[in-house]
Amino acid sequence: MLSDEEAKAVQGVARLAGQSVAAVKALCEFIAEYIGGPLEQGVAIWTDKLRYRRWENQIVLVEKAKAFLAARGMTGPTRALGLNLAIPLLEEASLADSEYLQDRWAALLANAADVTKPEVRRAYVTILAELTSFDASILVKLFDADLASEWTNDIPPQLWTHHLPDEVLVSNKSIEPAVLRPEVALSLTNLGRLDLIDSAGAFGGMAAVHWVSMTELGRQFVDACRP
Image (cartoon, rainbow, N blue to C red; front, side, top):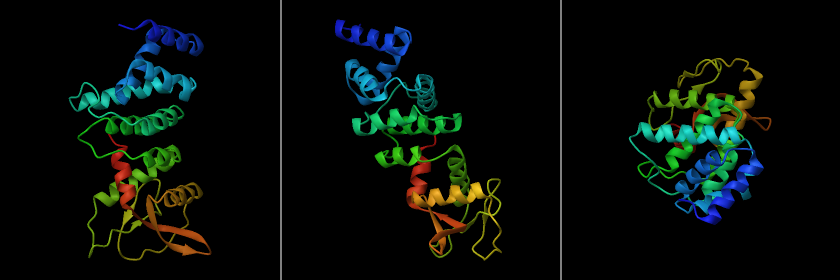
C-alpha cells in the first residue's frame, strides 16, 4: 500500500504526464524494483531525469524486459542496477525510435538485472545510444559471421563487407574490393569509431572498411544487447 507521500507523488506525475495513476504507479514500481530502492526513489528518477519523454517507449521497455526475464523463468530482477547505470539507460531507452532498437534496450536492461549474466557496463548505454537501427543490424550480421567462423593462428576471421546489408563474406584470402553502398560505409565507419570493429587499415586518413574484424568490446556489447 502506498504511503501518503508516495500517493501524492504518483498522482502528481500522472497529472503532468497525462497518464492514469495506475500506469504511472506500475512504471515507478518497476524502476524502483530494478534499482533496489523505495517507490519514492522510482518516482524521483522518473520526474527528475526522464521528464515524461516518450511515455509509450517506457511502457514498451517495461513489458519487453519483463518478457525477456520471464522467458528465463524469472519473476523479477536478481541484481539491482546502480543509479549511474539505471538513470542513463532508462533515459536513453525512452528515445529509441524503432522496435529493433527497443528490443536491444530491453535486452540490455534485462541482462543488467540478471545476476547470472556478465556485468553490464555504463559504456554500453553510451554505445547503444550512438547506433541507428541500421548500424545495430550491420553489427549483428558481423557478430554472427564472426561467431560462426574459425580463427587461424589466433587471428580473427576477416569479415568482408561488400555484400552488406544482405550478408557478410568470411575469408582470410584477399577479395577484390568493391564499391560499398554509402550507408554501409558510413555505418561501418561509425562502428569503427565506437571500437566495436577493427578496420583493415586507413588510407588518406579514412578507415578502409572493405574488410573488418570484431573487437572484444564489440562481441561483449552484442551479447549484452541480446535476450
